[in-house]
Each structure stands twice: as structure tokens, then as C-alpha cells.
Length: 251
Image (spheres, one colour):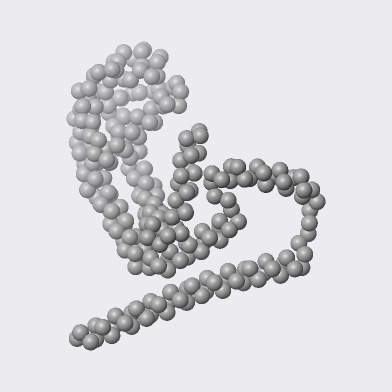
């Protein structure tokens, strides 16, 4: 659990790269490409589940013990694992042809009584045929579609990289102006809670001066966003006009 939490802390730390233009643009590209990947996963999941059910029904026919034992021994993982790893080129042809009879049992009473005991696969000539069509569909078509989506996302971000980076830079600066980044928050937040619980027992209503100050801060933030947007807009117009002039002179 601690390692899992540490993983998310490191992933969260990637936001600090948005302060610098070149690595910040790369982080933005990765975030946008992950959105394309989420759509791909939601589509491929149904294909993987359908092909996995076909494999399981033909390699292990009449297998009733689907949810026996601990959650790690559920047959759902066997159904999903083989077609999932085939997307990355793991064929496992010995299993698909039913020739792999090692470390398994054909005795029904054994693999039904002990869920951790693997059942030997049966031979079915249609399974390798379906596997070949499935791998051709996923590796040649779906994977290349994702690559094209990544290329389009890269081109879109690269074209407006400066404008998008300025926007995310402002978002990060505004966010961390009120937040302590990890792992320092693990040390500072407990002290803040103790101090707040000790010295701030009464609720203080915001005064009129505080409300005016908060309103001025919001107006300043909105004005800064508009200023940055206008600056980028006029800069793009200047670059476009300069390019047209250079092209006209060459013509």
C-alpha cells in the first residue's frame, strides 16, 4: 500500500515540470495522449473480453468453477490475460493449440476441489485460427489507429505549445500558491492542524476588507489570463504576417 501511494506521489510530482517550457510541453502531450489511450482501452476491453470468452469456452469446456478460491484464482483473470498480452505480441501458441500439458491436471475432481490447480487445455483447431485473426486485427489495425491519434495530438499540442504551456503554467502556479507539494505536506500539514486547533477555536467572519481583497485577487487573475491570451493572439498574428511577407518577397 505504501509503494502504491509512493507511485502516485511520483506521478503527482510530474506537475512541477510544467514550470519549464520544454519538459512542461512534454508533460502536457503525455496527458493529452492518455486521454486518447483511455478511449482505446474502453473499446478494446470488449474485444478482449469476447475473444477471451471464446478461448476459455473451447480450451476448457464445461468449466463451472469460475469464482472458487481467493480472488487471485478467479477464472476471469485467465479469460482476460491471454487476449490482453496478445496485443503486445505474446502468442503462447502451445496453450492455444492444447499441446501444453505441463503443470496441469485433467482430473476433474482435482481442479474443482483445488482452484489453484490449473486445468489442462483441450485441443480445438478453431482457437489458433481465431487467435490469428484477432492478433491481425489488434496489432495491425487498432494499435496503428492509436499511433495515428497520438501523432495528431502531438501535432495539435506542438502547434499551440506556447499558448497551452502558459495556460498550464498559470494553473500550476495558482494551485501551488495555496497548496504544499508532497512529500513536504506530510510534515507541515500536521503542524498546521495542531496550530489551527490550538489558536483558532473561534470562527472569524470575513471582514469587508477581506472580501474586497478576495474580489481584487479574482479580478487580477482574470485580467492576467486575458492579458496572456491577447499577448499570444497578437504574437501569432505577427508571426503569420511576417511569414506572409517573407513568402511574398521570395515569390
